[in-house]
Amino acid sequence: MGLELRQQLKLSQQLVMTPQLQQAIKLLQLSRLELLETVQQELMENPFLDEPETEADVSESTEKITESQAEEELVRNADWENYLGEFSSTSKQSNSRDSEIPEEGLSFEARLASKPTLEGHVNWQMRLSNFTDNEIAIGEIVLGNIDVNGYLQASAEEIISMVQATEAEVESVIKRIQRLDPVGIAARTPQECLLIQMDVLGYDDPILVSLVRDHLEDLEKNRYKPLARKFKISMDELKGYLDLLQTLDPLPGTNFSSSEPHYVSPDVHVYKYDDEFVVILNEDGLPRIQMNEFYMESMKGSAGKEKEYFQEKMRSAAWLMKSLYQRQRTLYKVVESIVRFQRGFFENGVTKLNPLILKEVAEDIEMHESTVSRITTSKYVSTPHGIFELKFFFNSALDINDGSQVGSESVKALIKKMIAEEDTKKPLSDELIGEILKKNLDVNIARRTVAKYRSALNIPSSSKRKQYF
Image (tube, rainbow, N blue to C red; front, side, top):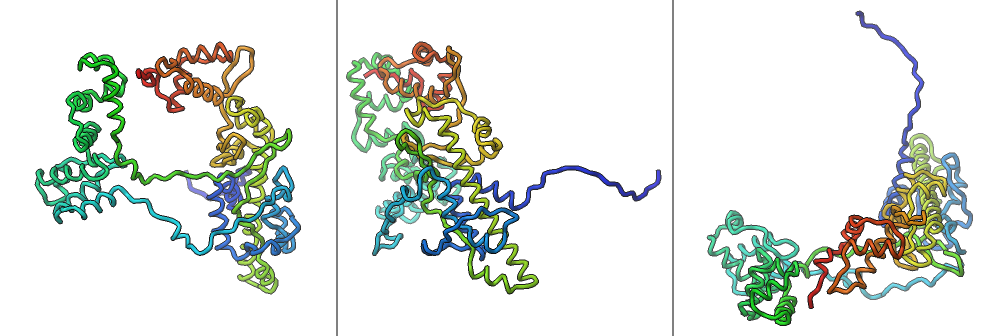
């Protein structure tokens, strides 16, 4: 068969995502803090974008920017403040508040203090004690192998391979470190940690020592009666030992943990005004961007590659402002739809949360499910009952005997409430919780479903919740 060149026409359709479309999709799923960083980055890189210094610098008129409306006058009149102002259930006048006056006289660095680390705290004590240089070198290797809970994760042999020392020297340094503050640091097991603390505090009762050394698992699983029989003591005496053990710290390193709480800035506020719920987008700290007048004027006299560069940057700025507008518009519409579907929650709390899926909200606002999924990712709403992630309002349904349905989050809240109010000496089993839900709420729920919801709430089983004293 011979080789030949041939031309052929083929008609096909395909979806091509332009860089501008990719940017718009990316902005949808950004959290509020990530959005601030993105806008600030664009302000630095695009000369056509500008952040007005005063309210007077912001244009009064607002025009929606589209890809075909990148003319000079239209772009100049677009501003960020009015984008936010459009998406509010109340007027701007009703939202006005006095600006906060920042503290004067102190730099930000002077107001903050770094939290001491566990390694630094113990190292400081070693250098103040009579540790030799070789012992300090061994101690630094030991501290480098301690986890966040304060337990040593390396054996003596592994430490020896990292430093010139004998096994006796390593064990001696570990023993001395274990008696520094916090006491019990660098222990290998919980038993060793507690025994060290008891030794330092002078708790040498043989029963107490045996409880920690040999029966810590029994104490964890509330096997109190067999222990009382073994040591020939009453339950009241055993309770005295348990109260003493509770004064010890099995996790001495957690007070120096480097993990910090994560604070959430809500993207939307929902509050009740008369009989209606008002939706207001959070505009605090969001940059108010507009077109730079200087570069707009400079573009008139430009030509060649300079003009092409100016036009590209102007189109990029216009598309960014349009994308920001669409993001705020979509977020407002989604939250407004959620409020309509979950009015029972906003009125009465989590126990009245209705089952809801993305498709229902998407059909309500006439958008695609993927758009709703992106805009509800990492977004938070402030409600009369606290701050919740938007994903929280989407939950599965459980059937009720009358044919209606109830949200799974509502059932979780009821289970949590029932367990919080139970008699700790006779805790509710998963089967009994299911029967109570069936009897009082007519909810068809199996025992394994109750167990699954309880585990999701990080609540232990009834045997572990039982208290004998």
